[in-house]
Amino acid sequence: MSAKTSVNPSQAYRLLHPMHTVLVSCIGNANKPNITTLAWAMPTSINPPLLAVSIAPGRHSHTLIEESGEFTVNIPTLDILQAVYTCGSLSGRSFDKFKKCALTPLPGRRVKAPAIRECTAHLECEVDGQMQTGDHTIFVGKILEAYADPGAFTDAGYDLKRTRHLYHLGGNNFAVLDPKIYKA
Image 1: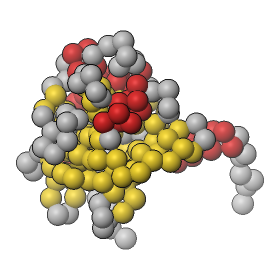
Image 2 (image 1 turned 180 degrees about the horizontal axis):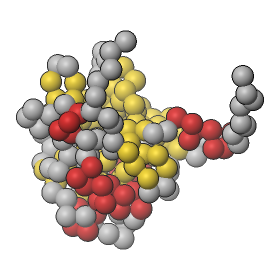
Image 3 (image 1 turned 90 degrees about the horizontal axis):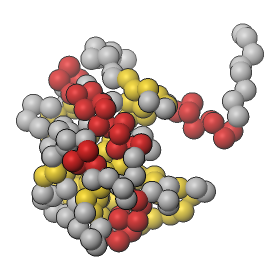
Image 4 (image 1 turned 30 degrees about the vertical axis):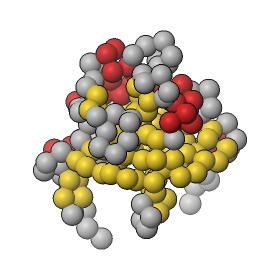
């Protein structure tokens, strides 16, 4: 067996990539919605339904989520790749990302944070807790409402031929899953 290559601990998180990419939409006290692109999102509990997103405190979305206590996780596809990259590259303090990226805000069903029409699925959350972890804050959201495009999601999961969700590799590099399903 050959020797393994060392990875600097500050870059070790990259060994977990590719990561499922999401767009988190939020709205603060000024009622101006914002979107941020994240690859650091995960479920944390089935009962109650909880998920976590990790956001740096300097991000505009961090401020808005702290103000409102809610956010919506939107699942984007390859069709809006450029918008996904732009939403993670520009600050919402300076730009209306919905307009800049030609994305359509939809009223939330249970929260003020809008959903994004061009995404295939949406999870509306209220903040259940938050924890500072080094240079990021983990926001734990209680899922109040979840919905998807008709035919995109069934009890068996996503239709991978139809959805083509994005996975972040690092920088401006993304991938989609091979739609072939392998059984163990």
